[in-house]
Length: 100
Image 1 (cartoon, rainbow, N blue to C red):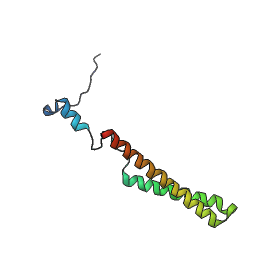
Image 2: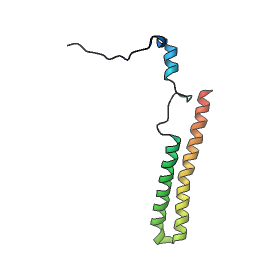
Image 3: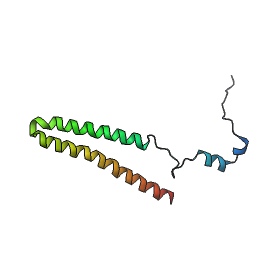
Image 4: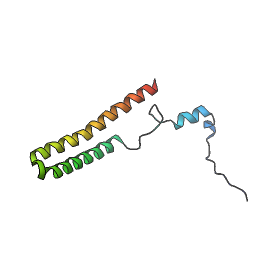
């Protein structure tokens, strides 16, 4: 039995390793592409923070009053945004350090 190996066809001009490396790199300094776009991340964070704020208000409302429940819900939803933006700033700072 013979094993067949499939090889990708390489363009003659790209046989040089530096050319191949340049073609495979993306625009980010680390060479990695994000798995989710910024727009989709904002939509996802919006949906999650609204759901978490609503759930918090719904659970705390009958016990502590609806005004406090809405305030705690807004605080909880705001904390989701805070974590998102702090992590975004940290990752941007790390990427700048890696590119230096």
